[in-house]
Image (cartoon, rainbow, N blue to C red; front, side, top):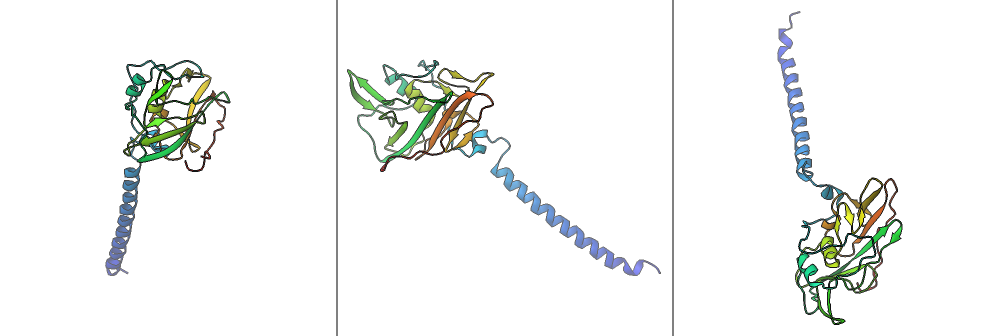
Length: 227
């Protein structure tokens, strides 16, 4: 029997198969485009971690501590406040008011976050304050601003007068045997901890210890009622 009578039927089937394959290609391609837009190849490790970050430029004009803890406050806070890109205010601004918490753990020992970060003290009396400050040694960071601006952990450390970047916090430096890791609400940030954006009720932990050791850090902090 000659194959010619069946040719139209085969051609129709072939067309249907090509059409189905084309639809599949278009759908898959669209999904890849969406995924690419959501996670561009140039995305930073900070973005991939899900931790909110913001640009932070290493300050100049001040000497940041590169010594082991504890770290004292600068004798003259004003140049450090200016280096952090902040201003000295005469009173707290409470239009935007929230809190975050900072833990620093070095070789399984907690480092004290001092009271008075962000305060100008003259003749033993506080004469000025910034939008980022600490009132006590609890590690609670107060963010009190007239406007809802972006503030980073690096700005707080600059006020404190302590170096903070991917490779160090103060004199705790990354080397062949030690690592520095940053966590926000228990989630690891694989980037510069100075870029961590401060937000309400964050638990920020900086962990320094032996390489190959699993970091033990808190995932949250129980803020006092009203904070």
